[in-house]
Image (cartoon, rainbow, N blue to C red; front, side, top):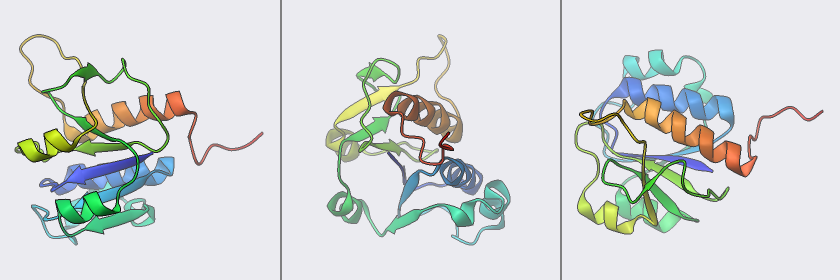
Length: 153
């Protein structure tokens, strides 16, 4: 299981997702360009010391990411075919999160194997990207029983 962030533009959300990934043992793909400097103090503050421990692969572009990835690409979007709870996940899936300010362009929607959403109450557009990523990643790990850091008994 992997998390991928498409051109993230809010360093606090990126840091939070790096912290989440580090704590859960999930690899992260960061697709450039970013909307902030990589050494932004807000990124470090949100990620605490954990972000530095995350398994991160930076991709210089969407094309570079596409060449490197394996498995299905699942796009979290408000323009989705399925609820995140209605699908079956595979441990080789990559969960793709779009930019906070603009989501992803149509070309990325078209490249996704599945488009999934989190059902919201009427009148609400979206959740914070880090919250949405955490919810869907939690469900995907639960289904695949692939918590890499789980202590063995």
